[in-house]
Image 1 (cartoon, one colour):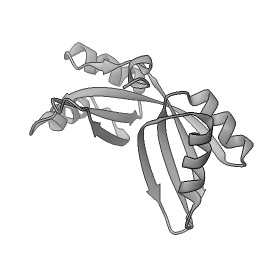
Image 2: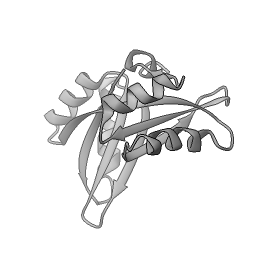
Image 3: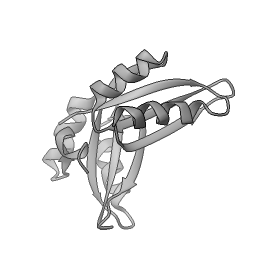
Image 4: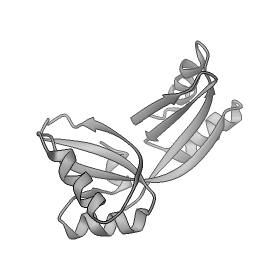
Length: 143
């Protein structure tokens, strides 16, 4: 139920993000979701891609520093309160959200939230016990 995410550490300068997308494009790897966080000196680009092994190898070959993290993809009703329902469940079970990002599926009925938790396995159990759909990596990579 966990999803493989890659994180790329980037110098905060013009063109560096385009360098990453060029490598992925030339490798035939499609980006399914992304988040970019920055400071004045560097950024962290977090990606869910169609082939994380191919992406990691291609990026490392071009000199990028690439990490791997397990995250959880959750399907949420795309309506007011959808996110709050999830966060309320997590809070009531003392599970901390370290970071998250989201995207809306083409149908517009559901959003997909990508979470990094302090206690991932417990978070998955709590969400599943309350009928929240966890999206497996094999499905997410092909969305």
